[in-house]
Image 1 (cartoon, rainbow, N blue to C red):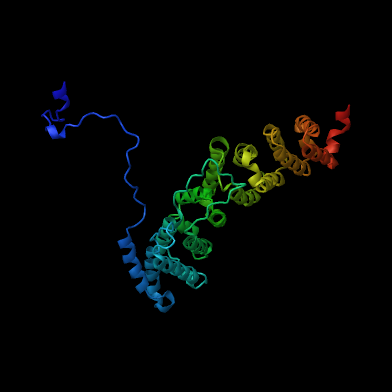
Image 2 (image 1 turned 90 degrees about the horizontal axis):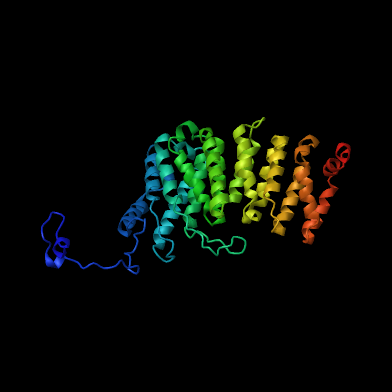
Length: 390
């Protein structure tokens, strides 16, 4: 048996020096250092040397500017390690100066003439290389209400990249029918996934970028709504953690405001399956105002939406959290300001049962807020309607 173990796959006996004794697997084996997903320092220095020698766009003949713009875009795809603040400072300053030059050049209608179809792939690729990156996972003890967010160290470069990208999207020279070949659904998905970053400055830019993309690229609208709903599903039913729910709801507020009347079935399904369940997570207070706005926008479009909204509030009522109960009562009051008597009829029993339990709450703020809601005339009319009293 020992000889059989020392044979090679071809059947020949292995050399004694190659026969290794069997050892149990070790958990403390040192792994080789992970290679960074960055270009080598030699290649980076070589490219930056080229970048340093390039002339300014304004000093170049008009017929050569597009080729120069493209070359500078490609060189701005060089990434730097900002974890070392003292490392390669000259290269970082040179790249930022070049990005600022590109962004300033396209800040005028004349400069935006350079947004031709042949340049679009390079612009999108430069933006993708700089913006799209893995989002570090949050630690278990991270509390967004108490802890300071981790600010992105590469922000001096990222901010200018976002400015350049925004000017590209809103430019009248960029036609959606042509640009959608390069700014595709995969890129939209990557932008939405980046909304989970901790830096609020970057989330604010992403919010503006996604809103502009939604407004300009009609072919991407359904995909953007569906992708945002998937983010909500994962947040509510799986992770319970996401940094960009408030910003995504701000985008949705504008989207809902543009819905046509009567509402499509898919929009009502989105309300019931994606929006209302956002009242359930523990972190709802971080995005309460944005969620309330979206909820009320649905009622402005269709008053009948009040029925699933009230049903959802009662279903997810946070009996064990007094702070959330106060917010839920506040949402109910806003809903009752807009609900009609005919639409309050189907939810009246569960509505008044819930409010009566809140009035009897041992927490004085919940009881006080529930009592105050009775100043609402529509609620009083619904409670003391002659038919109900009989």
